[in-house]
Length: 455
Image (cartoon, rainbow, N blue to C red):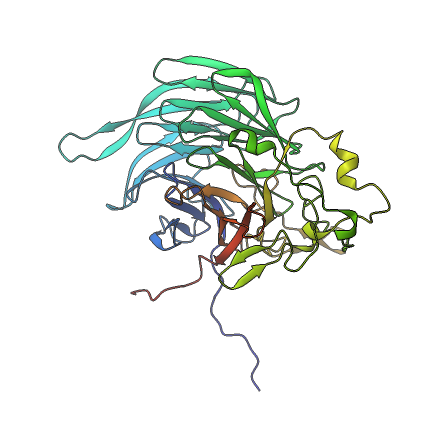
């Protein structure tokens, strides 16, 4: 029997970056072999392009299905990581190239502005329009803003409102681009890890590198932030997003958990009543990799479980983490921490799929063999090349956005790396308790062929 492998490369490209556009209806992926863009609502691909076949793009930000801002990266970059390229993907033509003299960390594009994020400054560019053809191109520099070190490329823009890290770690600044107004907010004691801006530009959410507390600020009031508690253990916040109406806030973290908070006035502070001791049920030890805890959830036991989500296929039981309650003979961990841990607990949470990326997710050999001067052989580990916004060299995960047409009920979580997935979640009402729960509606490996394609 011939068990030799076929002499062909069947590996899918590796996703170096994932970004939703400003309208939330598309997401774009920079690959080690070009770029892809997809409709967010159904994950159908709209663009497949290899600017230079076999070369990587570490940043892809799309203005629409025609114009895109690109930055090279990966093990074999398409271009220098210092250069921004502005492309017309319909005409397959590079319109402009700008060299910033240092690596670009992030790009944000809107219909009016292009924001280039560098390590300690951010630059605002405008567009120029050809009055004959209607085509647009990058224009001149409009403003430059200094920030503290910003290795995660934090930047939010809605209309004329721009939010960036401040010049001091833990602060952020809100700038009005049309009037040059500037406000500085003190958000955390440590450096910022994630930021989000509401769709109307009036509310900012921030998380520090510790990742236990999320603070929400009105852009007009720096003194009275709302505090939300994700958990008691430190975590890296990967994604943070407001729903279109600003009634909900969602976040993802390296714990593999998606948290959602209800921000509608007093409802955000409501907590469920603990069941009577006779109704409590012993459960298994909670998973180490996920941050479900009794701070965010109250246990229950009946059939179906009070926390189960009703679907047409029946009840989706909560994970064992959420069903767990300590023995009634002693105080619960939640009651112990309730007086110590401040902040509004998440309304609902669930796991999302991080994926199973290998340590050498960029496709390089794990080790390189070399011969030392003394004749001995040594193995050296081939490290991943860090991509913009992920200085740890890990793939992009937990990229989050709400469906702008989903009525504040549907959101997507997109993963990059070697195991690239698009996952859909929906907020549903529990038929027994009336509580809102988050349920996974399925996922797709979006780089795998899903539909017949014309060659």
